[in-house]
Length: 602
Image (cartoon, rainbow, N blue to C red; front, side):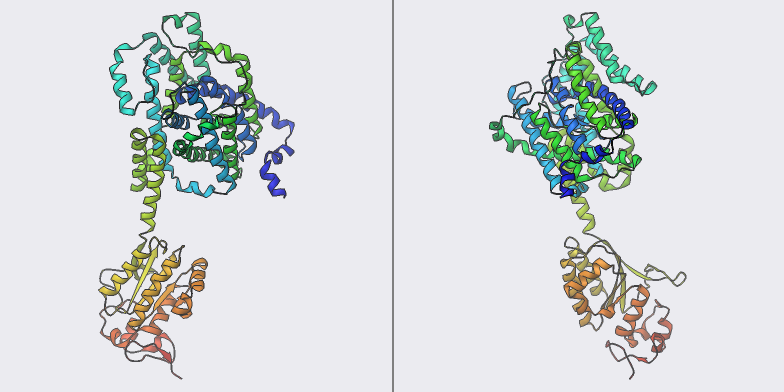
């Protein structure tokens, strides 16, 4: 009962130990985050095609909910660049931006995303995120950055180009209207970018984004640039986020929103957990992944009811929160309340902010989404990582963006399955110098037993490959009667694997030999036992070390006539066996003729 209560109200745990010294640190951190959140939220509302105030609303109640019901002490939730782009592409196919239907669909989409995320947390499905590789996120982020960057170029140039065009269509439109650039708008956009970049380098502790937007707003007001053709964002309502029940009649369109909602659900959870884990690595905080799912889900559900749109953990705001000395999730609560206070006090002043400045801010944010170092590492790491990254990047640019996430995830799963379905299988022999097992030298192999090492799993996905490899070995060596499988690196073994080894065991028994194993771990051994394969093969055929398994196979299955004719000396016992000294394997042992087993003389 107590654990259920802890999941329903997880913030009670840290609130019980909350002290006055925490309040000052959380207050400073929360206010600092709000200074960053206000301009970013306004800019990201442009990406979604929603009113500016909706971006601010998305940084109030959702931020507070995620802080109270999540597990991270420093994660700040709200609008993010990649999520905002998926929101726009998902909604713009169903309604025109700026219409009431478009706004209602944004609320419905938030509810769908939130229910999915909370449901995954309640069902303890955090393990599913393991299938979303880092390369998928890198490729998607880079592609989203390019799309966002190009989508903001018209705002910087002062061009009136409709949103919603494809990547190549947007490029064509910009080129066609390039002669219509508005000079003053372009200067304001460039000024914003310069101020943000310079302050980030020279004064990283300063709120560069806010300073840049204040400067541009003052210039617009001072020189009446709006009358000279500079587009401004206009008046923002001075009100708290209104509680609003989404129009559920629009649920008829819910089926068409499902792909976008799933993409936002997965992408949002990956973003949030990646940021939370990165910070937790420094603070040594233990995260509850499923609780974080619930926190993100409740945040997006609240966005649907309090006039926001889907969001996730923000890297910039979370990093600012951490660097500002936040101690508990209360800093996120303070941030949400501070944004609410800003809307009530300063909303009318934001009317003179030029659209070009918001576009400039987004260009800087988009550039920061391209992590060149990580991309270079991923491309150099493996061909699979490079393929996943590049294909996800191109899919983001040229396909519906919500499907780009699925393309990357399915490709990474497919490549993983292709790799695991082909475990590495190779022959080994003892090295006389070191006494350890090594790859079989060219031509040096026992005529009667192949000692193979399997590196990977023997499960339904790889069973056919393993069976084909073992049968090929038996077919290529007609005198081969026994196989010793070294299973030190086999961690997964299932019924399909059992069936394969049963068939191989029957084949080697028909040749007068046997199937032997070494290095079987406890979990895999239990599968042998439960399936009855242990009894069928024989318990004496299982040894902890390869050396003891080799000697057991020699005692039970080796034929002296073949040993006498063999050209190779693979084992240290080979010299004695060639001379017929079978007692080297144990006192009193005598081989029988043919391939029949050895037994002690009575």
